[in-house]
Length: 60
Image 1: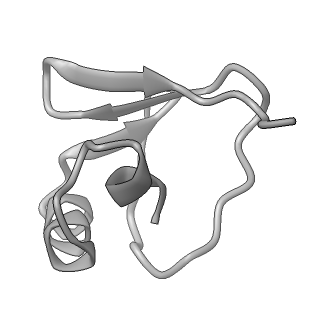
Image 2: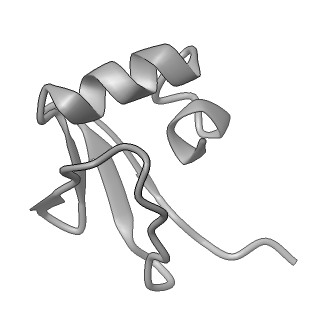
């Protein structure tokens, strides 16, 4: 869901495909399972491919 809301993926299907293909990392560690919930540390970097990334911050 974070991939879609951040604009790194256009749909949940695309987000799942990116994770399954190994194209998503969180702080340099590959995200292996798209259904597993992840609680990132403040300031964590979510990256898709070599050029697309966002820094995650807590809202509020």
